[in-house]
Length: 228
Image (cartoon, rainbow, N blue to C red):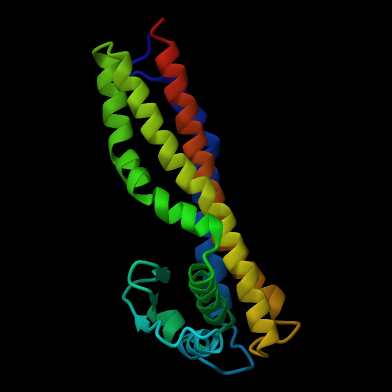
């Protein structure tokens, strides 16, 4: 039987953690690189987001400034888009790509995009699962309480499902962003691949998160079976 303080299954996490570290480095370096490349349209991320939202009939969705780096997000509960200073004030290809990506999420929300609706509905359970799955599982493992281990696994599955559903949501928002930027004349044909590089780097972080979660699930299953 394996125990949390002597657990050889941690080795399963190594490849996924390496991918996660690479993804974080990639998104930061790619964003930093293309933040230094001005878009010829000379529009700020806030201006582009506002114009794209207005064109889609979402004039009631405000675009707000938020602190932090790469803290940009669309909040479906408050129906607010929040952009970091580099994106809000920036006129770079990276700024426009991120602003359009968040606009893509606003359009998904307005159009009742099914994967986004599923993710939003799953969020409360996934949030509980991400916090409680491991404590419950390892309490069950230590005290040989299989129902606790099973509950922990099911809660973790909810958190994993949330991350898996996030993948099509993010890739769809990026696809919308590139189409919006090209159709609106905000990026030229030679600039679109650069914006795509920024968005692909960001998407890799979500792929890495799923990989880490899958390896954690495999660990939990191995540890439960090791009791026998």
